[in-house]
Length: 476
Image 1 (cartoon, one colour):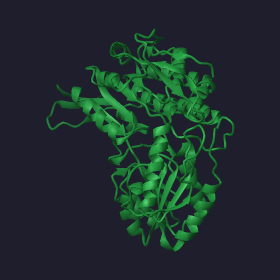
Image 2: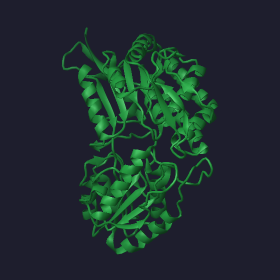
Image 3: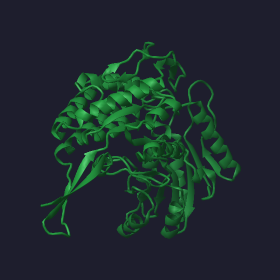
Image 4: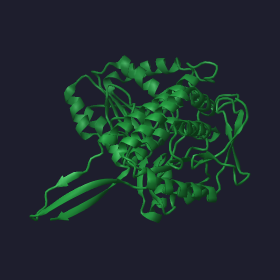
């Protein structure tokens, strides 16, 4: 990849940088410098919000079907540019080029999906208690939305947030992750190619202070974040300035409950795939496994065999390898968590050794003999480390799964419909996947309980996050 400096995208144009501040972008598999992006100044970021606010006055007045046509044009441009977006994403994230290009195509699919809400955003007519009176509930755009994008699926998540915001009549200012910014500017080129009106989508790289200036700008009415609990708390502080609406998808610690009647082979394969896809850097990746005691040894053996078959390395050379973690601090923190787990009595079945050589790699790691009170079971790992625990009966499994600060996704493997129904009605999580691992269907609703978030993404309910209501009381 040739070395270049990416510029921020404001009001339909790539702008000349106002400051010399540059953010370096590295390949996490090789640690090679890929290039630089210009850090936006607070003035540039404020100008971007102003541009979005001005554009929203026009964009919000278009018919929703016209906005839908613009989204469909953007989806087509994303597909046209999928290889270029994928090349940038693969280099900055350590994904394979195939996975990264497919992420761009999947982003185009969710954009098309949200375009379909054009004729389906509905208000309500509500009976009044008074004669000669009607109550009309309208759904209206909020205004300018600040979108804070994570590093793990930065192309898909960017469209997952902006597509519903736009169809509802809002405009957006996007802050990509500083770890994975170059793919966002390839998306900006697709935005230009699609003929999207200037100012509707603005994409800027920011430090924390500049992001704070955007999020507290008086025109920002909603802040949507996918990130950590700590980042969510910071966003809630930003929301205080304007009493802006938060939409937060935060940490996860997906429990997988494995009943004795489950298809153990299928469950073990799916769990190892979930844990090692993108080096375990998925909000919904299985993060703790609860196994019924009568099959514990058998299932642990299956996990151990399957995890041993996963090799790590640079996916640019072999797409079948497991890629790297996002950066050196992530690698260091995950290894320290594993060491503390072993010190607390967990048994290292596989992995757990810091690799030599370049790249932020960590081996797929399996820990048995874990207890519910261990840090490795209570805190999000966000890496390829799997703690395994045993339980006596389904009530104990449910209690352990629910004894947690997080409640994003959950998994159950069983062939018994009574067990499935029991867990479906009692699991304290926004999602339950029965006999499969999580995949966030975009027509569903991806929303966390407890510290896993407020509001959510996807489907009708995710789109309605980006609206506010107006009640009209009409006396006649």
